[in-house]
Length: 319
Image (tube, rainbow, N blue to C red):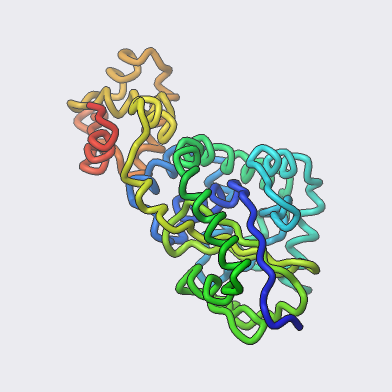
């Protein structure tokens, strides 16, 4: 067993998309600001919401390996590479990974529907990651300086012999000592590293986010919030319209602006030249994100903005 852990770093942004998805849609609250959580939840479609349901169970943090089919052990992994790997994954692989994760016997209830329809689950999960990335990519581009600084910080710690201190500061929920990692959660325990190296993967995520890959034979990986990420949540990019559209989708952005004063569903359909069924679908998603209200008055349903929506529009200077 080595006395000093060997560190490397991977810039693999798909883990940022996974962390945001788990927080905003899976309900694993890890410090993501409420407005971003609501906007991401509104952006992910029905298939994505259904696929993420197994991740919302608070008593179980185990998940199949195919959540991250392209692991960062061998270097950087782009979102596009990750999505391609997910879409090419045989459905039987998901079933096998679930059996490996949870052992013999019946699967946990929350994963059974995925095992029964693995192809549909993989499609929904890949779609959800893609939809989250459509929101997160502008934020990722603005984080270049933070990521470069983190590369230097890890490099200095490695060269100067201080990796133990660095590992202890990654997350309040993770500690290192005696050649092992003390991991949190319902399956908490100590993972012995042996001769395996540690791959660090900085993420743009809530301050309590943490994703671990501990099963690799040559390396383990730790995805953690990059220091300073909180400053990005408060600084929208220009132009504001493009950013808001990326957050909630162009149709929903226009819909939010259209209800500066309450309107009926039929008025919205006529004003926006969109089929009533589509208006209903988009309103369902915005209501789920607590960005609009709906009130029936006689035979008409009136749509209005919530205080959360007003805050979101103010953030992006839209009215």
